[in-house]
Length: 312
Ligand SMILES: [Zn+2]
Image (cartoon, rainbow, N blue to C red; front, side, top):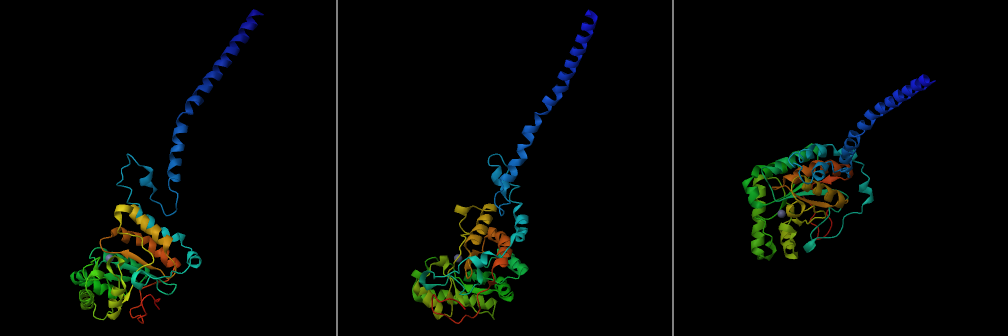
């Protein structure tokens, strides 16, 4: 009997030992899984909005080496047209009202007019012209007189590619309206002369005051020189890098602001002179806008409406 009990006891001990050893590896194996699985889950949640494919910089706030972050911007922008639906154009009210001095803010039709100011810039103007050509879009360029003098080939190209030219004064004086009438008239005339020297067949039918600082006097003088004064309805403030930053953040800001504010009939203000972020933003904006709106260059020869009246 004692032998049998001893044998049974030995078997029981062997069995217990086997269970214990079998459970050890499984307990140790659980350690790596908790740390590895949550980590990748963080990255996707950091990219909330569809347009923000640039989530990488914001995810890594402290140590993150920012340099690789800006690079994803252009490819992300070029893939955006996939989301075009065209529904927004029908649901937004038409742009209306007038700007300072009775200047125009809208095209007077459902068509949207893109305007690019302060050039021509030998570096950035060709880039926006290339983008516009790729998308088959015509726009309006409000050029500064002395830059037209310095870059006549850009003026020639703007006109040759079917865009509209607009007078943005000779040297962009923000207080132009405070000068006497003769000064203002000479300033605008000299600018037109320089534009027409580079593009002899063009007609300069529009004027935009520097900074949009129109007064009734400025609008009147421009009108006497055969130009309609255009303000804007949409302003993404692409010049305000102190507030909106530079690079990817500015690009995303410009895209978001234009997509948010544009309406049928909007005149959209942007800048080509020294504004590379604007050029990048329009890689995304052009297909987005084109899918929703008719985009036009302001007509070369509008029938000179009274100040504040809608364009044809
Ligand atoms: Zn300007």
